[in-house]
Length: 354
Ligand code: 13P
Ligand code: SF4
Image (cartoon, rainbow, N blue to C red; front, side, top):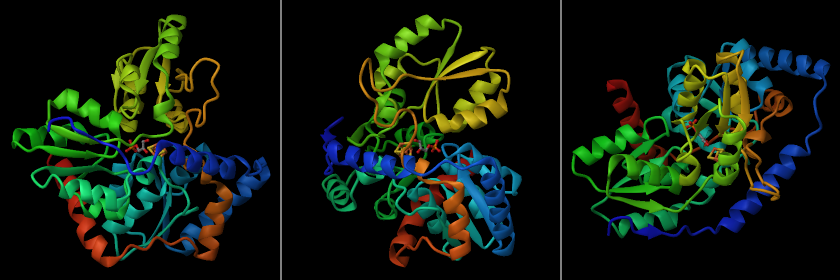
């Protein structure tokens, strides 16, 4: 049974089409002039104060939104820390700039708070690729396995899980479960799952999802880039293919990669993750140079080109609009919320003990 592969119910082609359609939406948005930018920022700040709201943004959203979150007393971080911050902050409304699962996680943890998002169509290929019915059937077929799901899943999938993890803590949680002699179902990212399996030696059944951004990083072209920049350190997110991970100097979560950029002595870095992270990397290491790892291969046209099409759906205009119109609130069925909070709380308790 070890290592048995379950194919996803949704084929890669339809996920890529969904990503391409998100990219069409995101990239057709007219650019914002400096004057409009400062007016929008002021409107958003006023609304945040008037609505007792706080802006929580992911590292992959537009730099202007990350800057605004920092200027307005909000927070920029990875998905785990976004959840922690939203949970601990006193504001009654959380404006979540990221993708839908981040808003849903915030709502599951804070059912009494109002959670709003700039665009509810901002999804994630991992989430799309793991429909709850197929996933539940897979879990039912392996009742003696502990179900561990990545944060990048729907509320309903989380409700079916024993644990939720993020990339920052996945290896620690799985190692803990291995020590307890547990066998694991991992979903949905196959590359992260394989990476964890290799590090922990766990008996893992892998769901075959992937991230449209990280899946496109290319090992051959990266190897060539390393020759071109022999002084550069290679930083890789573990949602990337194994051949790319094998070329890394550091493999880590988004927060871990920013830390590495700040702490390593290299002055140049090749980075295999969403390029939205460059805002924080440059803030953490202002005098260093960051280069996007190659995606899409030689001569090929990359689809996502190191930027998540769904993260790109967040912009200053829809942030202002959602605050002013009270639209795009996240709602979760209370029965699903009651179940989905358990694997998330388990993770928060585990990380607090660490
Ligand atoms: P983090 O959990 O590191 O924030 O990553 C989320 C994500 O979507 C990575 O692609
Ligand atoms: Fe999902 Fe990939 Fe976008 Fe992250 S970067 S939200 S994993 S599609």
